[in-house]
Image 1: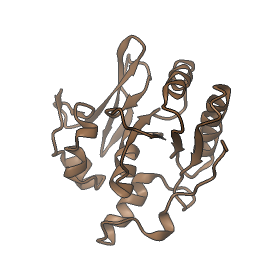
Image 2: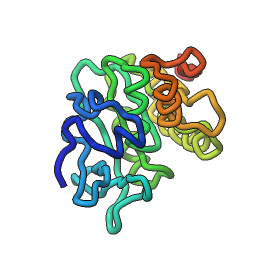
Image 3: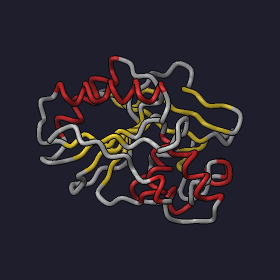
Amino acid sequence: MRPVQGAHPYLEKERRIPAAVLAAPRFAGRIYTDRHGNAVFPHYDRNGLCGFELRNARFKGFAKGGQKGLWYSAHTPGDQCLVITESAIESLSYHAIHKPEGTRYFSIAGEMNPTQRQLLETAFRKLPPGASIRIATNHDAGGRHLAGEIKAIALATDRADLALIDSQPEREGADWNDVLKEVAGQGREDEPESHQKNVTPTFE
């Protein structure tokens, strides 16, 4: 595998993720491609690399023999926001739409396992004072279930200073890559008003 450094046909053409996002320092060393042209997103647990999300036009899943941990973007000391999505592609899409500053990203690659719950709890405890957690799961039954699980993990940390925010797409059944493709299809660079984040603060 080799790192993606700003160009990947599947991510750009099929998923409409701009090359500038793929080349952004926030995602440097977090996106790879293999000899089959798959987009590869490494997952890590407490012991290091533990598996890979794999995506192409005909397949999406997790590498055989691997275990799900967390895919994550680069972190910077000034980050005040953590966005959690169901896939790395949805994290990239969220970034392309919102262009937020001081924001890091996690992907859980679907249903969570016990290791991922522990990793999230540890990450939440380490967030700086007053940080926000944006739960950017899909707008469907599965996404709502995951959002509930993530909120429960956050509440268990007793971090009353954290803002817990629902940030699902407005349209039922959509994920953030669906929103990005809709925006790209309209030829617009900015997010339509109707797709602005749905904010429901939980920690006040």
